Length: 110
Image (cartoon, rainbow, N blue to C red; front, side, top):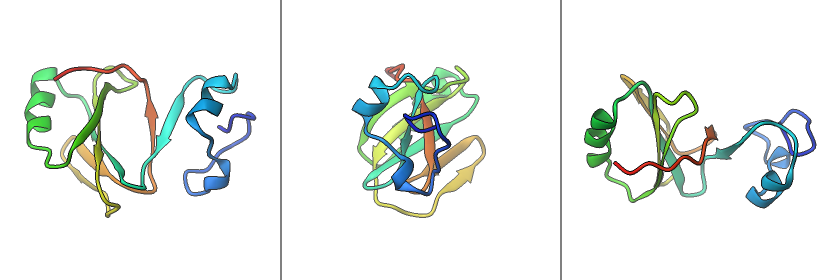
């Protein structure tokens, strides 16, 4: 959803907004981040904090931010990374381009 309340597209930058514009908007019930431009994300689904800690320890890229996912049962690990093809291995997905991640902003320390 755009800040104006219309449909947004994960592939059309014209429908995206700055973080400040999203914070000021009353449309929608949250915000997301479009990956790319040097920012990637590991999406860990249905993991305990202990499992997440083990996975995070093996991430080779510099970590920017770690948060609890919307479900409360997962973790998003935002990293500095070049744009590459995404992948999925078990309950871990890695994306660095053309992917929208719904964020909570609920920082966690692992």
